[in-house]
Every structure is written in structure tokens, then in C-alpha cells.
Amino acid sequence: MNTGRRFRVGKVHGKKVVYVRCGRGMVNGAAATQQMIDVFNVKGIVHFGIAGNMNNSMSIGDVTIPKKITNAGLWDWLNPDKAKGGEDLAYLEVRNYNVPKGDGNNELGSIGYSYEQLYSVTGRINSPQNVFWINTTQEWLHIAADLEKMELSQCVNASLCLPIKPKLVVGLKAATADIFVDNAAYRNFLYDTFGVSSSDMESSAVAMTCASNGYPVIVIRGLSDLAGVGGDNTVHKFGSLAATNTAKAVLEFIKKLPPS
Image (tube, rainbow, N blue to C red; front, side):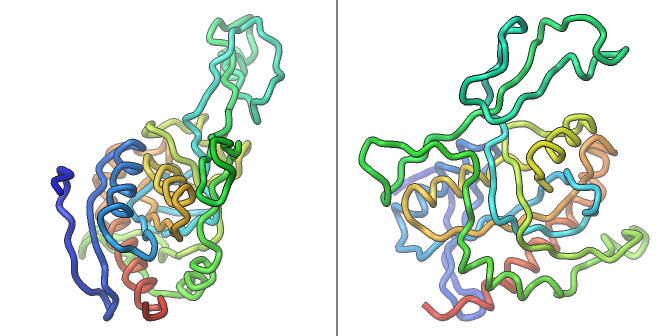
């Protein structure tokens, strides 16, 4: 079967694994996950990569293994004269960010954050469940909790090091959208409104595809930048370190998985 992707089959710490690069964005994340499930006899999906940091208590080089993920790119962009209401969970008022603050009307109006529709093998046929958060697999999170004290790399090379030693945290929340977030105001909005600590472009699509098919899933993401501070330059400087720490966490997690 030619899917346009190269799947590599092998073993890691004695466990059979299939590895594939999904590509950038939510469509790629969902498509690669569905292909993996359809073509191979997998037990579950370990999704990993780098992410932007939304949480001021986290730092570049840290690794997050979230307990739940939202699609923060599913919006209702409201007319400026429309009153709040309906089924939207939260709102971003564009005029709150006017300079001077709150000055006059802003025709961009507001954005209402909406729900995913989850079709699941465990749900009723043709009756999607409205969900805002997609949970990662609780059993795998318990296994991952043992990784929180693992040693992570602090230096890209001999001359480029982080000021503090990176840490791994299990059980935070994450956001996904087809948006590279390099804006401090929007970072603060996402953290203050939804409590998310990281932002990426694939994780919720992978998790939702797994939930829809009834497969276990865990997400492991290394933080490469603080949104709104440094942008692409920070990613270019520390992206490789975030990726290295993510890979270390993935290998350690696979090591702790019970035999098939």
C-alpha cells in the first residue's frame, strides 16, 4: 500500500515499533494516525514532537506529557454586533487588545471557541459527542509518571546551554491548531482561559483519531520556545535540544511499557 509515507519497522527496548513522520498540521496528523491503525496491527500510538510554551512556569527544553488536549483552532468568528451566547465555550474579544485598551468598536468582533464532534467506536452510531477536551490514555499516563525525574539534556553544544536544567511534567493540558503561535497576548489568553501549557499543530488530531478508533494514545512534546519571545530564532537555537529531550522521553516510555 503506497501512502506517500515511509513507515520504519523495528524494535526499541525489545518492543516492536512502527515509526512514521506525520508531517505538519492537523490533517497530516490525523491521516498518518489512521494509516498506522489501518495498515499495521498496532496496540496504540505514541505521538511526539516539539511545541510552543504557553506556561510561564515551564521553560525551553522542558518536556510535557499532557493529560488532555483541545483543538484551539475550531472557532466561530462572530459578527461584532452579535451578543455572546449559544454553545461556544469561551470568547476572545478582539477589542480588549485595542490600543488604547477597549477604545471604541472593533469590527473584527469576537471569536467563540467551539466543540469537536467525536464519532467513536464506543458511542452511538451517527450520534457524535460534543467534546472540547480529548483525553490521553490514563493507564499510559500512570506509566509516564515514572519519567518525571529522568535526566534531560541542558546544552545544545559546549557553548550553548540553558540557564536551568530542563524538567519533564506529566498531566498538564495542551492546545492544537494549524497556527504557529508567536504572540504573547494570545499565549496569555490561551493559558488564562483554558489552562494550556503547550501549543502545537498535530496532537489533538492524533488523539481524536485514536479516541475515535478506540486506541490508546500518549503525547510527548518538548518545548522549543516561549510564544511571543524570540519566535523562529529561539526555535532554531533550541529546537534540536527540545527534540533531543523529547526523544529521550519517548525511548524511556517505551522501555517502561509492559511486553505485548
